[in-house]
Image: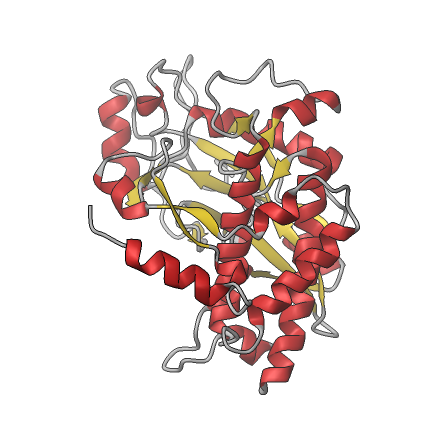
Amino acid sequence: MLDKLDVPKAPEGSITMPCLTQQLPSVLQRFPNANLLKSVVDCADAQASLRTLTIRPELNFRFHMKLSLACQITSALRTITPWSAQGGPIVTEIMERFIPSDLWIFSELAAATGSQSNFDDAKHLSCILRDSLEERADRENEVLILGAALTQQLPGTSQPYAESLFNLQTITQKQEWFRRYVECLLNLVLPPLVNHGIGLEAHGQNMVARICRETGNIKGFAVRDFGGIRLHTPTLRQQGVSFDAMFPDWAVVTENMKDVWGKVHHSLLQNHVGYLLDALNLQKHDGWAIVRDILEQVLSKLPQNGLYEFCLQEKMQFKCFLRMRMEGKYRDYVERDVPNVLLMGSDKWDDILANYVPSLHWT
């Protein structure tokens, strides 16, 4: 790719690293010996995840490139830490061993990052090469659709793309399609969680639906971005996984299984499923009852370990993004208990809400 873009070779003893033009001020401040070789325009398209690029087809470069960008969204700068750079290929290997075959993986095959001992500096010049699944999807006669894109609205309307793409005109059609979507999603995400302690950050931006071009049916999903998943190390060590080569203090690993469960509840149910349910206007049309029914069905086929009871607690912890941003926190979560949205529409919901609302206060 560098040859096709006529990028000069780096001087002997140096390496060539890509970065976003908008990131140059941060790079040059923290890497004073860096020299700009060339700026190239119109060679890539930005993905919805902002700092990830799809290289233009004429360059014949089959990888996506994820690059650091010192832009603050929610409570975090969207840089790439050495933990994420080193951890991506490690997580890819783990997932290739344990993830169901219908859950494709956007493999992270290689990465480079700053060498400073201060990771707050090192994270400002990082690059991850992520495999593209477009060719594989084409071979299978499938199209890849970002989960979050299905909740977005057609310009000038209040109609989400899910309704338009799948011709969902009635409440019954929406319910039936939503059930099929959630069944496929939970059947792929929950078995790795129960059997291996792998908690995918399965929100709508990380999960990509695989749709058959001919029938419009959901054939499966693909998962990307491993910086926010949770791995239960005791379970995975028992199954032959070693974490000895990883940088210490990697936030992805935990010995507390409920940390893993909480991550999945938040990203998969509160976020991914919840946003789609809301976009289809199924809150008052048994949307959450459908989710509870599917959750029970899927978990009934797996070893019982308390996950079902955990998911249906009256209250769940929810990240306080605004407070985290104001306090400058990212890796140290600030959370509070909120009514469990998964119980909405159940016999418990009115009592839960009645007991919760009086406790709201500003702090």
